[in-house]
Image 1 (cartoon, rainbow, N blue to C red):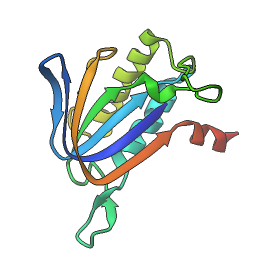
Image 2 (spheres, rainbow, N blue to C red):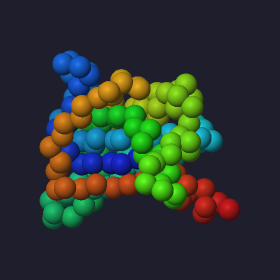
Image 3 (tube, one colour):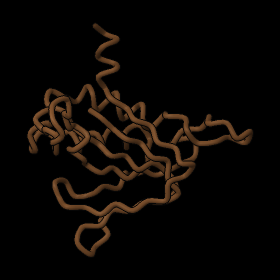
Length: 154
């Protein structure tokens, strides 16, 4: 799984002319599910996101997590994070999971975030053409790829 975490003052996702998810202070999480991902990757990633300390404390150090600041999360599925651009200039999306499996793991990831203590995560509409708006705070953007934890185990 790949995730782009953006610390935001607010964020929302619209489908058509309707807002389907919105948050105040927290994280916008763009989530890509790779072929071969499982609940294990979702568990690891959800725990990491919930505890990622990128909010400033009273000394202006990034030392507080989403849980510490009682922040919110907006999770948006984004299969393009799985793009393979090794050859040519046109991305290949074959590394992404099949849509039904990707949606299942996307939903599972959101349930795991909630189990980690994140207030009910807001979300987009899987597979829809979405417009995402955000006020980036910092800006602070972190990229996570569960492959880094797999390599450590090998």
